[in-house]
Image (cartoon, rainbow, N blue to C red):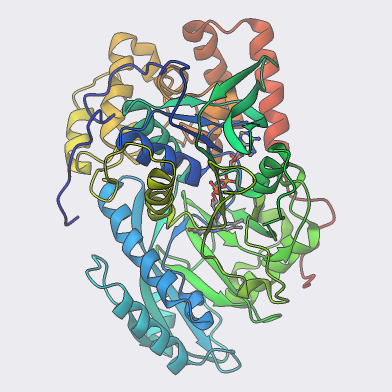
Length: 559
Ligand SMILES: Cc1cc2nc3c(=O)[nH]c(=O)nc-3n(C[C@H](O)[C@H](O)[C@H](O)COP(=O)(O)OP(=O)(O)OC[C@H]3O[C@@H](n4cnc5c(N)ncnc54)[C@H](O)[C@@H]3O)c2cc1C
């Protein structure tokens, strides 16, 4: 990738030292929420020299960020709504991520098939992509190509041929393991001195004469309560932003107007290659994605108003049916039915409250609100995209630092690679080959998950060769990752380890096959008792039960 890399002061990269928790002292800044926005803000703040504390009620990346389409994209669709600035910003950030996290973010070709009866004809799509290319000045990915009908069918043989007039292929990027992007931001923050507290919920924002002084927190695993102090608090709680404002005990306006988005995961679609498909749904004209992802296929998304509690959200039968029917419309050969769905997931977009009927027209631009009069020092983040998290963090801190007269350096996150982004794939694979205890079948996995930090995982297997054994067939994950996740990456539960650190939990069986080996490692090397292992297993199974295919989803039922 082009561009100059710089090592961060206190970078967690190759010379990573054992994670030590920063002490509980008065902080300059408290960030509430360990999704992509909170973790990104914490890293930027710590790199600027601010004493920073990140508080997350569950694990890192356990909410909206995780339930996304995992695209690092300009947002072609936003052009229709005239959001040129947002598209340009997103395309610049796409380049930053391709450069600074090359192990996590990779270029992704997408094909848009165009049909006779489509809302957007060939010339409209082609022109949109011409503008998209213009807005991504300095891009490292190829520009778009226009294909004839025959060329499109040759490149994507499973496509519906009936009514196809041609297609356009363009590039965006994909972050397969968005969980890791959040974890690496938190690691980068910790390496620069931040305190990262997971499973720690903010129950109350403390105020003195309309000025924030700190927060009351509760450890969600032990129930223990305590306080953290700072005069600057950033509310990056995603779908819970309004609830944090309520916890400030002030009559503040309601900011969110969330919408729900559902995805399904299937094993494969005949004729879908490494190129993703960005199709227009026949039933309602909405664009949706069919994405090669993690050796499987991710299909989504829906977009409906939703005021439900985010943790209680499940995919509905109607949503699954809609996605199945629209995929069959685009790839008739796939004949997908409910039985082909491995799992589902859904999340709420924490969008700004706007009175628009068309949910697709609600801006995906983020808003930054300083609650100056009622709660000086409190700032809320509303909306945003994974793609633009770094720039959002920069913008927030560029506003908060002078407002609250904090002493801080300027932002460096556009230049500093994320902790695993400090060596090329070839270098990492060469180094992994020097660890005989680590099977060659795990090398690609270790690089894709940890990047330049992979040899640190492998080193655990050198000390204790049994940790080089696979956790399950297929994922490439090894026992050392369980130990590494808990000792070095803020994981506390089995779910944290398998679903948001080593990624074995995202396979077709949602990590069930990895449970026995992972628990054996945890018992032997982390001291988990029999009772703890049983409780962890039960909690894990309960967590993945939320991703099950809903009963009642019927093939052929279009909403
Ligand atoms: C279906 C869908 C698809 C999407 N696809 C894309 C895409 O492809 N590309 C893209 O760029 N964007 C996409 N987005 C948008 C993107 O996912 C979100 O804008 C982004 O993830 C929001 O991140 P966040 O950190 O603000 O929120 P979250 O990820 O929700 O993080 C907020 C965190 O705050 C924590 N929290 C809440 N209350 C408390 C409390 N009291 N104490 C402590 N912690 C608390 C929560 O536990 C949570 O972890 C998509 C969104 C959805 C829903």
